[in-house]
Image (cartoon, chains in turn cyan, blue):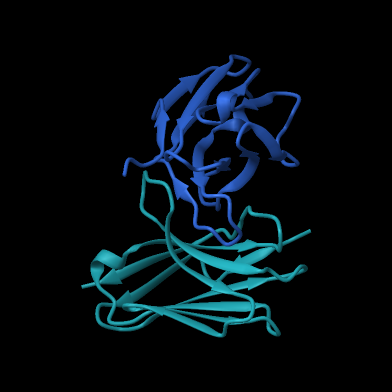
Length: 112
Length: 114
């Protein structure tokens, strides 16, 4: 069965540094990989999507990489701010599935 | 545009009781999803609708969970009878019917079964 591992349950970094979150998956290769942010008591919010034939995607301070050989995606937040503190979820979509399989998430805390 | 609406936000019931959750997706979104999110875990897909038809319900515990989406808009998810392990947040999401489309989530219903 599909399995997604996200690095450490919790990650603490200093304000201004770059946060790097890891998403490793097994079994099937996804057509798309998405990253979501979830704040306490709220539903996840979409951040970025990367396709299987793309290596890198950027949006403002966010960058996602996708290595289908390693079966890994990295999610970077540059110049991190305390407001970036949240849980970040990666999710896979198989070809034709139009639904998502989520990882367990990484709780990021940016320390002022 | 209005987001995905869910009600109630919180519900406490005793085991073996029944409970129902309601979801109103974003207008025009053909696809609607129900997820279960247990504390400390990522959302797990329970059921996916496209319009009013079920696309995927492979992870829905059908002996106690049921869902419907009448008229292809609003949806309800029911649990009967509830078990202690059903304590979780139930999230509803919707998306346009295209591959790779982002999903829009509601705030969720936090269910506590005692």
